[in-house]
Figure 1 (cartoon, helix red, strand yellow):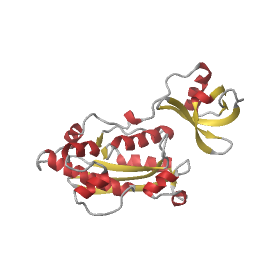
Figure 2: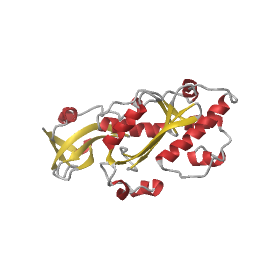
Figure 3: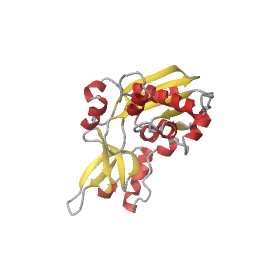
Figure 4: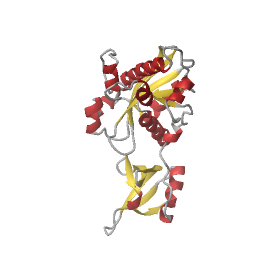
Length: 269
């Protein structure tokens, strides 16, 4: 490849809903060699769901002394610089970074993200399926850890190298050409949380409060039950599926929570 490429992977603390970064691992590759790597656990603002612990093995005790997510992500973005990226099933990992950049008000990387899953479907068609672990077994790569960020980033790089080799029968392939072969361009910007579009008049103060990060009180609940006043510090609004949500710090508990906008009956600035 004719320019550095950062192949990365993320593990998350959440099973459903908005993603929360738990671990990030990456290798910087150039000319078929790993020239640098990045690996860090992050202490998320939410408890780790047991469902995801069964996949990656990371529990709350393992991250109790880890750096906060905002610090870890800022270090990763500084290490990344302007390099393009690649990941297996890249939209998932790009979405994790997109949500966290918005959550912590960090600049979103501008480079393209190449999806090694799409490349594998195109150039390793004979594989039983195109999950990363299956591809590793199919290509008879060395045995090792799976579902940890740095390990999976390394596996994804090796799958990428195989796809690049097959793309032109062993002839060199540039990073831009690989990105084109992977299909429609993917960026972190495209994977940021979609802003809640149609706020009802009673909810419009939420947008201003998110922008200013100012404390507000939500009167929250489902009619006909009387609403409960909740003091929160808003972070951002977003759509997910058919619903719109507010992510905010609950000032009573000090924890980060998600509130459905259709249950917010009134907003008091």
